[in-house]
Length: 166
Image (cartoon, rainbow, N blue to C red; front, side):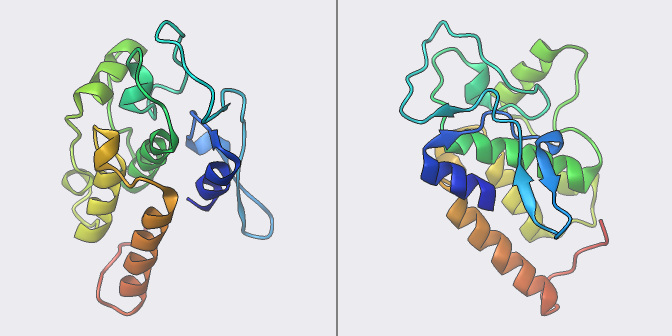
């Protein structure tokens, strides 16, 4: 989420957030890699332009022709990454990339808590908001996401929320 804040400040949308592009440094930091399909927020997208992204993590608007792709798309993809981390599976599973894309667009996401009942309600709610079907229903920028995660972690550390070892 901090890397998304830096991208936002630079006016960049990554468009391919996924585990392979999140690197841990030897000092415990996190870096966001592979800006190969990133673009500036100010660059208009043609309705006929081919959409890119990794099917398991792609946002619904990246799948739709003419969909506005902005920082909220990256929040969605980070949510899909988080979903996989806490459940051990992709948010949507199908035989083809096209079928997976259609599932992202349809937005019938199984809450992570239904797959892993040990996930605290607060964490389930954060992930579900990150992966909301419509961008206006997600965190609008990385800052409120980081605040929600910080509150969750403080509650966990104080014993107000229980988190299984994931």
